[in-house]
Length: 91
Image (cartoon, rainbow, N blue to C red; front, side, top):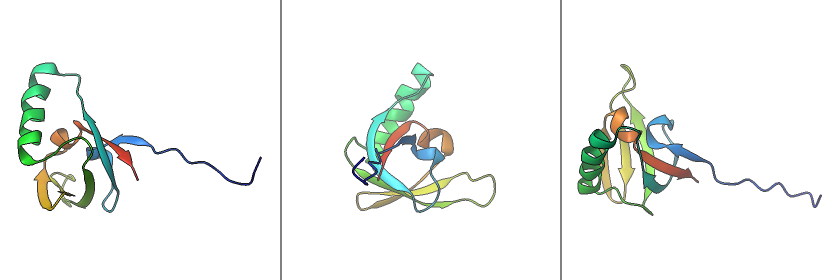
């Protein structure tokens, strides 16, 4: 052992992150094909894309929905079910 501990980046969904957490968008995925295709198209239209940095800024105090995230120069409010389609590699 060389005394260094290598920590690999951890994948997660955007909807599971706590305020202050962030990373890089790596993919969009869901088990419900029809619904997810429409929602993923909507997320892309809002400006989400693979390779962009994203950070969770705030959760609503009532049920934690919606959440507020920042990506690029935009601040966006999302429902948790939408945010759970976004796969993020944590920083």
